[in-house]
Image (cartoon, each protein chain N blue to C red):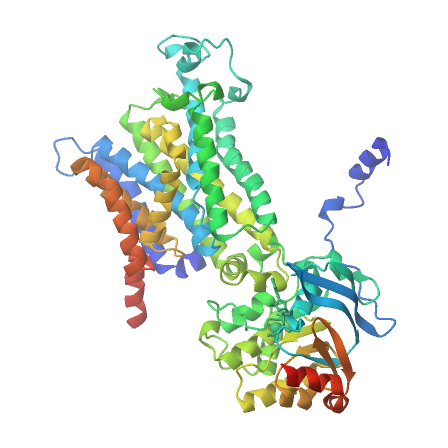
Length: 362
Length: 276
Ligand SMILES: Nc1ncnc2c1ncn2[C@@H]1O[C@H](COP(=O)(O)OP(=O)(O)OP(=O)(O)O)[C@@H](O)[C@H]1O
Ligand SMILES: [Mg+2]
């Protein structure tokens, strides 16, 4: 019932979800069941690439929720994505067991290399999948909660808040680069073998991860849709447009910001966790300030405050990125910068804004 | 409290935990017939004294007009009452028991003080009806709003307010597309739907046509009695049409108080207005 009502309120989003459902069914079938000689066969590489795009799309939806609907321009969501990724990476490292290069039964290779004798306390528990999954949402969520509590309570807004989020992700970048931190330094975590007992090299596992990513995107999208269509969502846009008025109307603006920001960070963490087994590596590069800015560009390109625009933007920009970095490796950053300028100047409502304009005139 | 006792109080099953009890302000106590006391309030911005030993008492159910030249501190006074600006010294009481200086904006709003800004501020991207829905009284916590739905009674209340502010026909229009005067009304409607005891209305007639102004005057006078209304206004004709009692603010303190006629014959007031 609720679902139907939600979908009715978001026709473009429903179309996108239907497309997503179709892809979720077709891509694994084309990969697993069709022979490689078939022209419809989809390679495992392509499927994994698409799976990663879906993770990015979920990340973009998370950013759109706080930026598009609440007006908080977070330039640090890459940090939550990376933390979720690291939590998953730690689980995957523990699954390697004694199959590492040094063959140590417990310690990951990089710890043996650093001459560590025992597992640091914060690595305990990550051998359990459920524990790692809990950390995937709890760690980014807690960080967002603490950061948000400090920032929103003292009413930091606008550019200052954006700069603080950049500083947050940069600080984490520096911290995770250090070998002593115990997260593999600048190499990060890699050489994963299997997940829940399934080999990460097998096509079936890859297909499973693809389906999991698509499902996470679908559910994440729907939960954000539910929020934005509720009165809570209307309070959020009210805060975005007239923060003072909202406060004088009796809403505790900082609580609203805090909970939405935290929820969004958790979604970003889930996206990161699904990304890592498909990418095969997580390293501090994910904390780079530029990475977080890129996410915002996806959302801007797609069209903010629409949710489906964020998905479309993430897919389009990342497809362009894959294409351009292969064709002209040096040109990518210029293309990205140019794209951002163009979209800001010419398409303030993003690419999906073009469609919406048509909807209105029709 | 000893540790044992505090553990016991946590374990008690006949009460909810302390942090779960909603912090409702104490009830408004109007035993002395005065709803707002401002006493000896001082505010300075970087050494500039915007409010200077301000004393003001507002009776329950009164409609009070506040006039004064630009920069007299009228808006700043409202900022203090509603918690936007902190007073350097002085006291502000709402009724006998509620200390406004210790509260923040949402608390003050919940206690029953509504405010219209000098520049009309409505939620421009929301339809008129949603503006009213958002403003409506009730629990305004994060989780309640997630699942909140309008019930029949609330819909009726919204309709009632729409009739009062004369925006029934525009109820589905984006607030941003309303005329200036209509926005002013919508904002007043947003105050009314919160059921405030005290309304602070900053320049309600600004940018209104003569007709609109008359209707606004009617609206405000009809509110007095059930509500207490403080109106800040520059337009003297407008003030004359609604005011029983007028306070003149000048350089952050009350210069004169009385009926409109008293005020207009007051030598100091004439000087201030002619001087500016
Ligand atoms: N946040 C602030 N920082 C510095 N100065 C301020 C601030 N707010 C108000 N002032 C100054 O305090 C004085 C009183 O301002 P206020 O807005 O209260 O006047 P007003 O009586 O409402 O005037 P108007 O009729 O123009 O609305 C003005 O000189 C203004 O410049
Ligand atoms: Mg003013």
